[in-house]
Structure formats: structure tokens, C-alpha cells
Length: 439
Image (cartoon, rainbow, N blue to C red):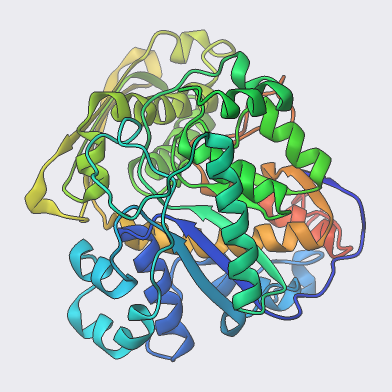
């Protein structure tokens, strides 16, 4: 089973679940506001598999297709309590208003609730996210000290809100590109590097470390090098904590994981894929910095090679050109636009083109991902599944592999099958293979 299991029994989702987000910007406030809106019956949780998707059980003719939330014991939305860290001290209402994702008529009915959510001081250094200036920031002599402060925050938040369990989902900005080094290789080296204030230890790693040390699942929604390092994977396995990442699969990359499998399924060739984006939110401003863009670029570029496997199909995919551009354009706000020009070829080598213009809303697509990752990670934790949760790859641009020697799966439809079959196995049902499906 993806993510090793120590028990075949899933503990029930009793009590209250805390979801804490590093970052209280566009994505986090849209997520929080959306859940509260659903709880009050003001909207539907569109885009959320945990709330709206069904799962087939047994053969097709049996007609057993319960909702996922009725099949596996997920935390109920009414039992969720929200918290956050952010270097900007704005409460969730102010932050959501500034982000400009949700309109006033959606924010005002839940304004009092959003105003009650104030971010804890963040672990933040400007050199890792150069375009943001923050005043709501922790201080400490060493990065180890800062990590211990985060651990205390988690304990205090849990006690203050009388929570049974906590999950942390990274919703903050993209940090500068960091290559894995010896500081990340073992837990001893990682802790030594924290003590030495080593620049290779970014704030996101401190959040991941603090979460794992507190027995809290950690989901990395940005392309930062964070929980996906040997030291923290080792720690997660030792502590029995579920982890996953990285980088929410929302707009353009999501479309790539839909289209590329279709090309490969038909054995159509690819000469080149040119992608460009314009966006104007805080994420766009951060990515306007070349060091932060490098982190995002690495995340986006890996998808096509992994799906198309040019080493196996050189006549079709070897040497295809893949270009990704992100442009900061303030007037667009959170309404990201992605253009794709795809040069393909078919029978006898004749060229064809596919053009996609996806006018999406970045945080609207990301918010249900945050919810699903939090609820599924909490489920995994209660099921005794520890370490990398590869079955959650469905939600990520650069998913982690539970076996470092194997490349992660990027094909959206294989990822969906893996996710649902994991849920089936957890509950003692047979995986669906679509073989002998008429019975």
C-alpha cells in the first residue's frame, strides 16, 4: 500500500481537527472562507473529491458507488478549526479582501468568522522570499530555536482549541531554489545545520520539521525543497507521520497531466510544448524574482518527461522542446491565464497543433486541494500510514515517490486510480482493475 501501514484498522475521526496553514494569503483565505461558506449552506464544495466524488466498489453491475466521505471515515467539516502563520499580521478577512479572489457578497456573510482568525508570527526570512516584507515574524538565536517555537505554537493551538488532531498544509509563497545538499542528507546533519543557521535550511523545512516532531502530517503546497529531503523523510518514518508534496497542481500543469497522457495513449508524437502564464497576485509577484521562479520552473518542467518517457519512445518524444514562462502582470490579480502551444505529429510525420487558453482562478482551484489533502492526510495518520503518501500524487505538480529509486507517477488518471484503490484497500474492498468488469 502507498505509505506503509502499521494497522489495518482506521481509527475513527472523533473530536476536532485543526488545520494550520503556513501562509494566510490568497489560497489559505479562499480555502477557509469556502469551508465556512459550505458549513453555513451558502455554497457547495465544488472541486473537492472528499466532499463531492463517488467511489465505485466491486463490479460495475453491483451499482455500489457511495460518496467517498460516506465510504471512509473523514473528519466532518463542522469539526475543523483553522489556524495560520503569516509574516503579514492581517486577519483572514483583511487578507482575503486584499487578495481580491472572493467578492464582497461572499465575504461579508462570514466576515466575523474570518476576522477571528489572526495569524501567529511566522518563521520568515526575506532572502528566501525577496518580494515580501513582513513584520509579524519570530526571532531566535538559531533556526533550531525557531523550529522549537513552531512546535510550541502547534501544542498551544491544539490545547487552546481542544483539538484531537492537527494537519499542516503549506500555503505560503515559493522560496528561492535550493539544491539538496549534505545538510539535508541525515537527521543529524539537518539538526546540526539548524544549530549553525545554515542557509541551506529554509523556513519551509523548519515548519516541516516542527510538524513531524509533533506527530502532525505535513503537506507541501509549494515547489520549495521542504519535506522532500532524506532527513525529514527519515524522521517522518521514525515518528510514524504522514507527509506529502509538492506544489499544488492547479492550472497549466493540471492541463498537461490531462493532455499528455492522451497523446501518449494514441502514440502521437510531440515536437514541442510552449507554455506561458500571466498572473498578478502575491504568487506572481514572488515568482517575478528569478530565484523563486527557478524553483517553480523545475517543478513544472519535470511533468512531461515523466509522463511521455522519451527514453522508451524515442521516435515520438526524444528531444522535444519544452519552454515554460511566468509573467507578473498586476491587473490580472488572482485570475491566472495560461497559454499553451503544443506542436504534435501523427501518421507519416505530418504536423498538427493544439492550442489551449486556460483563464483560470488560481486560488479557486487550489482551495479544494487544500481541503482534500488535509482530510486525506488526517485519514492516513489515523490508519497508521507513515512517511511519503504517494497516493496523494493526484494533487501535486512534483509528487514525491515513496521509493527514491522510482520516479513518481505524473499521469493524472493513473494517480486517480491509485488514490481510489488506496481508499478501497483501507476499507477492505478489492482494487478496481476494469478486468472482467461485466460480472
